[in-house]
Length: 302
Image 1 (cartoon, rainbow, N blue to C red):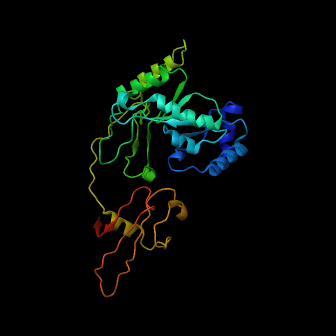
Image 2: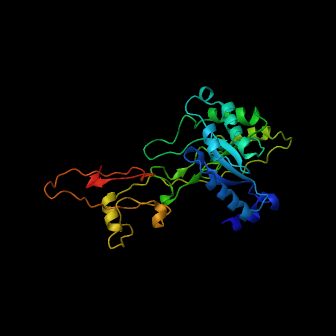
Image 3: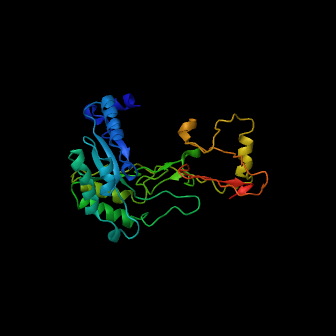
Protein backbone atom coordinates (compact mmCIF):
# COMPACT_ATOMS: atom_id res chain seq x y z
CA UNK A 1 0.00 0.00 0.00
CA UNK A 2 2.80 2.46 0.79
CA UNK A 3 3.95 2.87 -2.85
CA UNK A 4 0.41 3.96 -3.63
CA UNK A 5 0.38 6.42 -0.73
CA UNK A 6 3.82 7.95 -1.31
CA UNK A 7 3.06 10.17 -4.37
CA UNK A 8 0.18 11.77 -2.42
CA UNK A 9 2.23 12.87 0.61
CA UNK A 10 2.25 16.55 1.47
CA UNK A 11 6.00 16.37 2.06
CA UNK A 12 7.76 16.34 -0.32
CA UNK A 13 5.17 16.15 -3.12
CA UNK A 14 2.56 18.69 -2.01
CA UNK A 15 -0.21 16.09 -1.90
CA UNK A 16 -3.22 15.83 0.45
CA UNK A 17 -1.76 13.31 2.94
CA UNK A 18 -0.19 15.41 5.69
CA UNK A 19 0.59 12.70 8.24
CA UNK A 20 0.81 8.89 8.37
CA UNK A 21 -0.20 7.05 11.55
CA UNK A 22 2.08 4.38 13.02
CA UNK A 23 -0.25 2.99 15.73
CA UNK A 24 -3.61 3.74 17.34
CA UNK A 25 -4.09 3.63 21.13
CA UNK A 26 -1.47 0.89 21.35
CA UNK A 27 -0.29 2.12 24.74
CA UNK A 28 -3.58 1.12 26.37
CA UNK A 29 -2.58 -2.55 26.16
CA UNK A 30 1.03 -2.83 24.92
CA UNK A 31 4.51 -1.39 25.36
CA UNK A 32 6.65 -3.30 22.84
CA UNK A 33 9.09 -0.65 21.63
CA UNK A 34 10.81 -3.09 19.24
CA UNK A 35 7.47 -3.62 17.44
CA UNK A 36 6.82 0.13 17.24
CA UNK A 37 10.36 0.80 16.02
CA UNK A 38 9.94 -1.80 13.27
CA UNK A 39 6.72 -0.10 12.14
CA UNK A 40 8.41 3.32 12.15
CA UNK A 41 11.43 2.14 10.20
CA UNK A 42 9.32 0.19 7.72
CA UNK A 43 7.19 3.23 6.97
CA UNK A 44 10.22 5.50 6.57
CA UNK A 45 11.91 3.00 4.25
CA UNK A 46 8.83 2.98 2.03
CA UNK A 47 7.67 6.59 2.30
CA UNK A 48 10.93 8.50 2.61
CA UNK A 49 12.67 10.46 5.34
CA UNK A 50 10.44 13.54 5.05
CA UNK A 51 7.14 11.79 5.92
CA UNK A 52 5.54 13.05 9.17
CA UNK A 53 4.74 9.99 11.28
CA UNK A 54 2.47 10.09 14.35
CA UNK A 55 0.82 7.82 16.91
CA UNK A 56 -2.34 8.38 18.94
CA UNK A 57 -3.09 7.37 22.52
CA UNK A 58 -5.56 8.30 25.21
CA UNK A 59 -4.90 11.27 27.48
CA UNK A 60 -3.33 8.97 30.09
CA UNK A 61 0.38 9.74 30.47
CA UNK A 62 1.21 6.08 31.20
CA UNK A 63 -0.45 4.97 27.95
CA UNK A 64 1.37 7.68 26.02
CA UNK A 65 4.74 6.63 27.43
CA UNK A 66 4.03 3.01 26.50
CA UNK A 67 3.81 3.81 22.80
CA UNK A 68 6.07 6.85 22.38
CA UNK A 69 9.28 6.29 20.41
CA UNK A 70 11.80 8.78 18.96
CA UNK A 71 10.91 10.24 15.60
CA UNK A 72 7.14 9.69 15.80
CA UNK A 73 4.99 12.70 16.74
CA UNK A 74 2.84 11.69 19.74
CA UNK A 75 -0.74 12.96 19.97
CA UNK A 76 -3.73 12.19 22.18
CA UNK A 77 -7.47 11.68 21.87
CA UNK A 78 -10.04 12.63 24.47
CA UNK A 79 -13.68 13.38 25.08
CA UNK A 80 -15.84 13.64 28.14
CA UNK A 81 -18.17 11.24 29.93
CA UNK A 82 -20.92 13.30 31.52
CA UNK A 83 -20.90 17.00 32.31
CA UNK A 84 -18.16 18.50 30.16
CA UNK A 85 -16.83 21.31 32.30
CA UNK A 86 -16.68 19.07 35.38
CA UNK A 87 -15.12 16.04 33.70
CA UNK A 88 -12.69 17.34 31.09
CA UNK A 89 -9.29 18.66 32.05
CA UNK A 90 -7.49 19.95 28.98
CA UNK A 91 -4.35 20.76 30.91
CA UNK A 92 -4.04 17.11 31.97
CA UNK A 93 -4.59 15.99 28.38
CA UNK A 94 -1.86 18.24 27.03
CA UNK A 95 0.45 17.21 29.88
CA UNK A 96 -0.03 13.59 28.87
CA UNK A 97 0.83 14.46 25.29
CA UNK A 98 3.94 16.30 26.46
CA UNK A 99 5.03 13.14 28.32
CA UNK A 100 5.16 11.45 24.93
CA UNK A 101 6.83 14.32 23.11
CA UNK A 102 9.62 14.31 25.69
CA UNK A 103 10.38 10.77 24.51
CA UNK A 104 9.79 11.22 20.79
CA UNK A 105 11.77 14.47 20.61
CA UNK A 106 9.39 15.76 17.95
CA UNK A 107 8.13 19.33 18.57
CA UNK A 108 4.55 20.10 17.67
CA UNK A 109 1.22 21.59 18.76
CA UNK A 110 -1.39 20.35 21.18
CA UNK A 111 -3.34 17.88 19.07
CA UNK A 112 -6.49 15.87 19.71
CA UNK A 113 -6.38 13.33 16.89
CA UNK A 114 -9.85 11.91 17.55
CA UNK A 115 -12.36 14.54 18.56
CA UNK A 116 -15.81 12.93 18.63
CA UNK A 117 -18.62 15.36 17.82
CA UNK A 118 -20.98 12.45 18.48
CA UNK A 119 -20.95 8.69 18.77
CA UNK A 120 -22.23 5.63 16.98
CA UNK A 121 -25.63 4.09 17.65
CA UNK A 122 -26.59 0.47 18.26
CA UNK A 123 -29.68 -1.42 17.22
CA UNK A 124 -30.87 -1.58 20.82
CA UNK A 125 -30.84 2.14 21.56
CA UNK A 126 -31.44 5.52 19.99
CA UNK A 127 -28.47 7.21 18.36
CA UNK A 128 -27.89 10.10 20.66
CA UNK A 129 -25.67 10.55 23.69
CA UNK A 130 -24.96 13.44 26.10
CA UNK A 131 -22.01 14.56 23.95
CA UNK A 132 -24.23 14.44 20.86
CA UNK A 133 -25.23 18.08 21.32
CA UNK A 134 -24.44 21.54 20.05
CA UNK A 135 -23.56 22.59 23.59
CA UNK A 136 -20.76 20.02 23.79
CA UNK A 137 -19.37 20.90 20.38
CA UNK A 138 -19.53 24.63 21.18
CA UNK A 139 -17.76 24.12 24.47
CA UNK A 140 -14.89 22.00 23.21
CA UNK A 141 -14.30 24.16 20.13
CA UNK A 142 -14.22 27.28 22.28
CA UNK A 143 -11.84 25.59 24.73
CA UNK A 144 -9.48 23.94 22.26
CA UNK A 145 -9.54 25.81 18.98
CA UNK A 146 -10.24 29.37 20.03
CA UNK A 147 -8.83 29.67 23.56
CA UNK A 148 -5.68 27.68 22.76
CA UNK A 149 -4.06 29.12 19.64
CA UNK A 150 -1.58 26.23 19.57
CA UNK A 151 -4.17 23.43 19.58
CA UNK A 152 -5.61 21.36 16.77
CA UNK A 153 -8.56 18.99 16.41
CA UNK A 154 -9.09 16.12 14.02
CA UNK A 155 -12.83 15.46 13.72
CA UNK A 156 -13.88 11.84 14.01
CA UNK A 157 -16.01 11.93 12.01
CA UNK A 158 -15.84 15.03 9.78
CA UNK A 159 -18.12 13.38 7.21
CA UNK A 160 -20.70 10.88 8.41
CA UNK A 161 -20.67 7.53 6.66
CA UNK A 162 -22.47 4.24 6.21
CA UNK A 163 -21.45 0.73 7.23
CA UNK A 164 -22.57 -1.56 4.42
CA UNK A 165 -23.25 -5.25 4.91
CA UNK A 166 -21.14 -6.76 7.70
CA UNK A 167 -18.65 -3.88 7.86
CA UNK A 168 -20.00 -2.55 11.16
CA UNK A 169 -19.05 -4.33 14.35
CA UNK A 170 -22.12 -5.86 15.95
CA UNK A 171 -24.38 -4.41 17.27
CA UNK A 172 -23.53 -1.04 15.62
CA UNK A 173 -26.11 0.27 13.17
CA UNK A 174 -25.37 0.75 9.48
CA UNK A 175 -25.32 4.51 10.08
CA UNK A 176 -21.93 5.91 11.10
CA UNK A 177 -23.07 9.51 11.20
CA UNK A 178 -21.33 10.47 14.47
CA UNK A 179 -23.08 13.86 14.51
CA UNK A 180 -20.47 14.92 11.94
CA UNK A 181 -20.42 18.47 10.52
CA UNK A 182 -21.31 16.88 7.16
CA UNK A 183 -23.87 14.18 7.77
CA UNK A 184 -24.30 10.72 6.31
CA UNK A 185 -26.33 11.95 3.33
CA UNK A 186 -23.78 14.62 2.41
CA UNK A 187 -25.83 17.50 3.84
CA UNK A 188 -24.60 20.09 6.34
CA UNK A 189 -25.23 18.60 9.79
CA UNK A 190 -26.67 20.45 12.75
CA UNK A 191 -23.21 21.53 13.97
CA UNK A 192 -21.92 22.48 10.49
CA UNK A 193 -22.34 26.24 10.81
CA UNK A 194 -20.88 26.36 14.32
CA UNK A 195 -17.83 24.34 13.34
CA UNK A 196 -17.39 26.38 10.18
CA UNK A 197 -17.43 29.71 11.99
CA UNK A 198 -15.14 28.45 14.76
CA UNK A 199 -12.57 27.17 12.30
CA UNK A 200 -12.65 30.47 10.45
CA UNK A 201 -12.07 32.32 13.71
CA UNK A 202 -9.37 29.91 14.86
CA UNK A 203 -7.32 30.31 11.71
CA UNK A 204 -7.51 34.08 12.15
CA UNK A 205 -8.07 34.79 8.48
CA UNK A 206 -9.75 37.85 6.99
CA UNK A 207 -10.88 35.76 4.01
CA UNK A 208 -14.38 34.37 4.60
CA UNK A 209 -15.04 30.71 3.76
CA UNK A 210 -16.88 29.98 0.51
CA UNK A 211 -20.65 29.45 0.68
CA UNK A 212 -21.76 25.87 1.41
CA UNK A 213 -23.04 23.82 -1.54
CA UNK A 214 -26.74 23.75 -2.36
CA UNK A 215 -28.77 21.04 -0.56
CA UNK A 216 -28.97 17.68 -2.28
CA UNK A 217 -32.47 16.69 -3.38
CA UNK A 218 -33.92 14.05 -1.05
CA UNK A 219 -36.79 11.61 -1.44
CA UNK A 220 -38.86 9.51 0.94
CA UNK A 221 -39.05 5.75 0.60
CA UNK A 222 -42.06 5.49 2.89
CA UNK A 223 -42.63 2.60 5.29
CA UNK A 224 -41.00 -0.73 4.48
CA UNK A 225 -42.62 -3.83 5.98
CA UNK A 226 -40.49 -6.92 6.63
CA UNK A 227 -42.59 -10.03 6.09
CA UNK A 228 -40.06 -12.86 6.47
CA UNK A 229 -37.85 -13.75 9.40
CA UNK A 230 -35.14 -16.42 9.68
CA UNK A 231 -33.59 -17.68 12.89
CA UNK A 232 -29.81 -17.31 13.00
CA UNK A 233 -29.26 -21.01 13.74
CA UNK A 234 -31.35 -22.17 10.78
CA UNK A 235 -29.73 -19.58 8.50
CA UNK A 236 -26.25 -20.80 9.48
CA UNK A 237 -27.26 -24.41 8.81
CA UNK A 238 -28.55 -23.45 5.38
CA UNK A 239 -25.55 -21.32 4.43
CA UNK A 240 -22.99 -23.90 5.54
CA UNK A 241 -24.70 -26.97 4.07
CA UNK A 242 -22.11 -28.89 2.10
CA UNK A 243 -19.41 -26.34 2.87
CA UNK A 244 -15.85 -27.38 3.50
CA UNK A 245 -14.86 -27.52 7.14
CA UNK A 246 -12.23 -24.79 7.47
CA UNK A 247 -11.58 -24.86 11.21
CA UNK A 248 -10.96 -27.90 13.36
CA UNK A 249 -9.71 -27.30 16.86
CA UNK A 250 -10.49 -26.99 20.51
CA UNK A 251 -10.92 -23.20 20.52
CA UNK A 252 -12.23 -20.44 18.23
CA UNK A 253 -9.60 -18.82 16.02
CA UNK A 254 -8.79 -15.21 15.21
CA UNK A 255 -10.32 -14.03 11.94
CA UNK A 256 -6.89 -13.52 10.38
CA UNK A 257 -5.94 -17.16 10.96
CA UNK A 258 -8.76 -18.30 8.69
CA UNK A 259 -8.21 -15.56 6.10
CA UNK A 260 -11.33 -13.58 7.01
CA UNK A 261 -11.42 -9.78 7.41
CA UNK A 262 -15.05 -9.47 8.55
CA UNK A 263 -18.28 -11.40 8.87
CA UNK A 264 -19.29 -14.24 11.19
CA UNK A 265 -17.62 -17.60 11.81
CA UNK A 266 -19.96 -20.43 12.83
CA UNK A 267 -18.64 -23.13 15.16
CA UNK A 268 -20.36 -26.41 16.03
CA UNK A 269 -18.69 -27.98 19.09
CA UNK A 270 -18.83 -31.63 20.14
CA UNK A 271 -19.21 -32.21 23.85
CA UNK A 272 -17.25 -35.10 25.36
CA UNK A 273 -19.16 -36.38 28.39
CA UNK A 274 -18.76 -39.43 30.55
CA UNK A 275 -20.67 -42.48 29.33
CA UNK A 276 -21.78 -43.11 32.86
CA UNK A 277 -23.15 -39.57 33.28
CA UNK A 278 -24.61 -38.26 29.98
CA UNK A 279 -26.16 -35.27 31.76
CA UNK A 280 -22.87 -34.02 33.19
CA UNK A 281 -22.33 -30.29 32.76
CA UNK A 282 -19.90 -29.01 30.15
CA UNK A 283 -18.21 -25.62 30.20
CA UNK A 284 -17.76 -23.44 27.12
CA UNK A 285 -14.89 -21.04 27.77
CA UNK A 286 -14.27 -17.99 25.60
CA UNK A 287 -11.61 -16.40 27.79
CA UNK A 288 -9.00 -14.52 25.77
CA UNK A 289 -10.65 -15.66 22.52
CA UNK A 290 -13.73 -13.53 21.94
CA UNK A 291 -12.66 -9.99 21.04
CA UNK A 292 -15.85 -8.66 19.55
CA UNK A 293 -19.30 -10.28 19.59
CA UNK A 294 -20.35 -13.86 20.29
CA UNK A 295 -23.75 -15.56 20.05
CA UNK A 296 -24.15 -19.00 21.66
CA UNK A 297 -27.03 -21.31 20.72
CA UNK A 298 -28.29 -24.56 22.16
CA UNK A 299 -31.42 -24.80 20.13
CA UNK A 300 -32.15 -21.22 21.22
CA UNK A 301 -29.86 -18.30 21.94
CA UNK A 302 -28.37 -18.54 25.43
